[in-house]
Length: 227
Image (cartoon, rainbow, N blue to C red; front, top):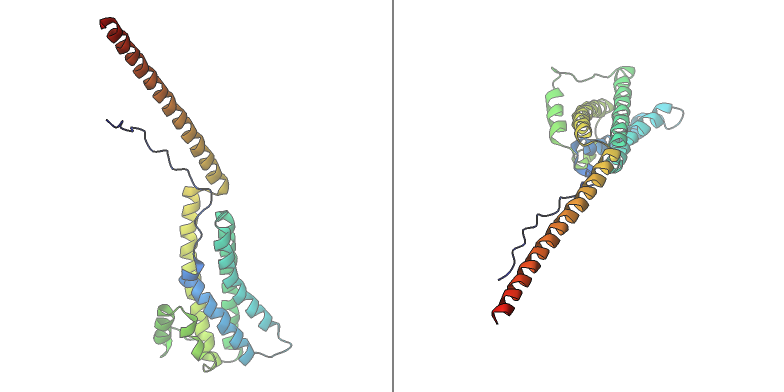
């Protein structure tokens, strides 16, 4: 008869590395891609080619917003603290870009679209429902500077709000899961616990085999006496 294995499965070890977030699926990241490409075209079309530092500032802010999301998600595998810091840098960059677009409108005597403006609701709905670059790119060369700036301002506000919610979620994860040091400690403790449980199980099996061996010897002894 086959002997039944009553051993319990070993405890699953705590993973030191966290699962990397696929930033390309994050809606706010997708919108930052739109913002960067839109800003590149905007500065080429509506700002002086030379002598205006705003061009470099806007491009750098748009790029920083996008790139720091990527770097933060990659670094988050080993350091949630670094991920949170880089996400905050990304938010700050988007806020800087928002300020530049906001300054452009009054400086050029253009209108900022607010609730009540005839095109505000349509623009807001479009920006909410569309994240992909391909949904915006055909308009980059067609929009007036007023249209492009208002769309960019709306996207900046949306990115900031979504990133703030995402950061709050990550902060809660950090509190409950800890950083790399805590995860390494948990992994080491889990490994030691597994070792201890394995040794204890082997000791129990050895004792059981000794008992079985003693019983078999006694049976053999009795059979020998009967013969």
